[in-house]
Image (cartoon, rainbow, N blue to C red; front, side):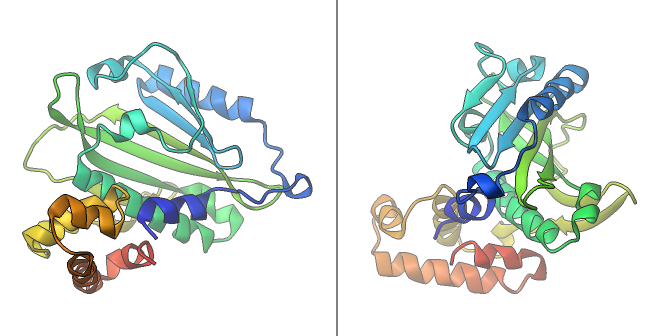
Length: 250
């Protein structure tokens, strides 16, 4: 199972029946997303895990990143904002998915009253209106339902990073905002661990390609792809901070 399928299976509330339904008011959360976009000039994405929908509120930052401003908000029949995700550097996109899975599993293991203290802060590369990569600050918050205890909303905020220094790498952090502490810090550099071919396979995996599709794209056999994928798991598994990565392939 690829990482996007794992995330969909993990995050979406597909089996919510009427008795077990979350009754939180979507309109109030949409208003919160709108306020963030207006006050902080962010691109605010509110994803509804129960309805499998997203609402994208854009600001002038969207223009800088070359995103269309035809509608505001844009309503999407998916929890994935493809127009934005296509802009993210492939390496950072894969790490973003892994980090989100790790974040969910961390919060899922906590008591409900503790979850509100935690959020994700990332520094990722996205293509701008000139088709050049710029650093973007990405923050993510999860809101759980008091009715059924399940994850209901995810709020993602994208804003142009103040520091555009190339020498500073992409960053993926989980923080406790109440204490001002970094809980999980992932600065794994795949390029120092994996071979060039393994990096190619890894990028295809992150985009949701099957082993057969990867084999066809790289003109190699499916057995070779499977061997590369196993090597990737074994190499990355030596890093404690990347345990969730292995789970994403099962």
